[in-house]
Amino acid sequence: MKRRAYGFVILFLLLILPACTSESAAPLAPPVEPSKPPSLSEWMESSATAIKSEKRIVLGFSQLGSESAWRNANTASVQEAAEESGITLVMANAEQSQEKQFEAVREFIRQRVDVIAIAPVVESGWESILQEAKEAGIPVVILDRSVNVEDSSLFVTTIGSDFKEEGVKAGKYLMDLMRNRAGPIRIAELQGTSGSAPSIRRGEGFRSVIDAREDMVITQSAPADFTESKGKEIMRGFLQVPAGERPQVLFAHNDDMAIGAIEAIEEAGLKPGADIEIVSVDGSRRALQLLADGKMSAVVECNPLLGPLLMQAAKEIMAGRTLPKRMVPPEDIFTQDRAAKEVGNRKF
Ligand code: GYE
Image (cartoon, rainbow, N blue to C red; front, side):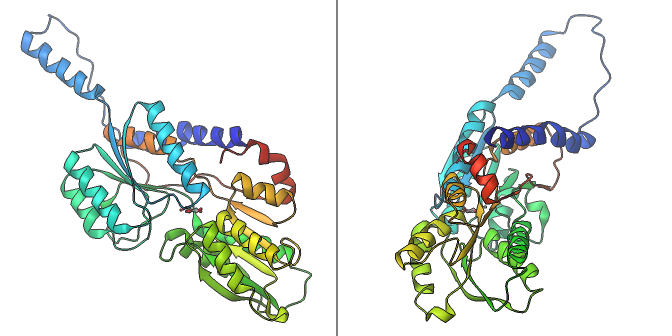
């Protein structure tokens, strides 16, 4: 699976990007037949242009934090891809603080980097900092999570998953799993970071599907910040109810929270995957192992390996090409059988 997923990214780059960008490429000037050797000043001008175009691209990247296996894989993917593409990466970890992301962007502007990439911790509040980058003439790529701004000229493109679709996939899987089970079915939900695009959209997508069954109800829901420790703590709280009110299903917005919740469920003497069906999002190696062991029911894939797409985008931008406004990697869902086959190849 690892190779195949990587292959898809490369294929995506090779097939989609050139096709999407060639339209707006500047028309080539007609070839000039050199009838006489260039003058010294002509020669100096053309070699200066050549040197300039070979200058290494400097990319400033504001990463939002290191809360999960997904995030660490995303950071590593960006670092590796920068190295492979000969792009100079200046990266700052904002440790979940939007304020720190603003500071990082301002620092990138001061350093006059060529391109700025931001993985935004939350969806709102980005207008003025993006405006600052725009006024400085530095193009911005939004990576992974999206921003909610009215003026879409404030960024060049968004590279990242369709989070709503991920929630829809989780909901559909559950509807199918429960099709012969009588209600009421109580669902507990561990949300990610409040106000973050993946948490908002996964929640929306999930609800849009399960709402079709009136006897499937989200009885408990709270943010657990996408971390394992918070997932465990909140799940412990969810289990402090009489047995007849306990959830039969857990929808966790990421694997790390599901893993923490599994510990809490086992500590309470219950069987994850049997007493409580568990569906989460990401597809980390640890989660796929738990899925293969029967402790989870399904994991919706979310691809963190966005580094190659980001580097390609930076190069295209510097070459003056227009990019599609949104780039979404292809994703799937892991069931127990599939997880058992693919866990060994997992990249993160
Ligand atoms: O699902 C979660 C991480 O933004 C898609 O953030 C990302 C999410 C991912 O912390 O594990």
